[in-house]
Each structure stands twice: as structure tokens, then as C-alpha cells.
Length: 74
Image (cartoon, rainbow, N blue to C red; front, side, top):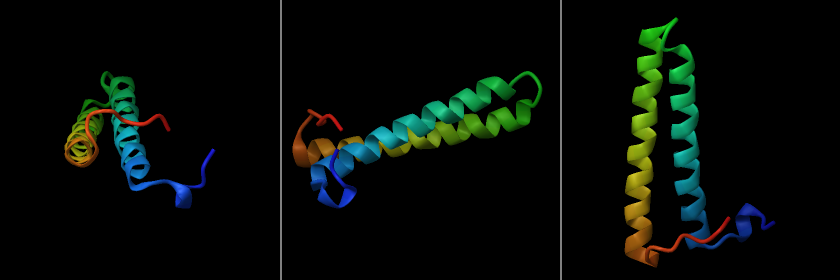
């Protein structure tokens, strides 16, 4: 496994994309777990998940413009 400092720009951007995707999934899991008991809190986590999806989309667009469509495995 590479140290973060040894990653290329392409790899760092791929890590950021993967992190945004994972964060979105985590927030949606929280929202699903809270929906019945705490619907207002669940709504906040759903909104946070959507924001992370938006971040991922922006990063993916940036990646595709610079490096093409194939994300490297991390």
C-alpha cells in the first residue's frame, strides 16, 4: 500500500471520489436507522448524503476532464 504522500494526482482524486461515495452511504444508513424514531434527524442525514453525492459528481467530472473515465483501483 502506498503512503498518501506517494500517490499521484490521479490517485488522490480517485481516493476523494471514493470517500465522497462512502460518506454518502454512511449518511443514508444513519437516515434509514433514524427515520421511524427521529424523522427530522433522518432528514438532516439524507440532506448530508445528497450533498456528498453532489461533491462526488463534481470530483468525478473533474477527474474525467483530466484523466478520462477509468478510475484506478485504490
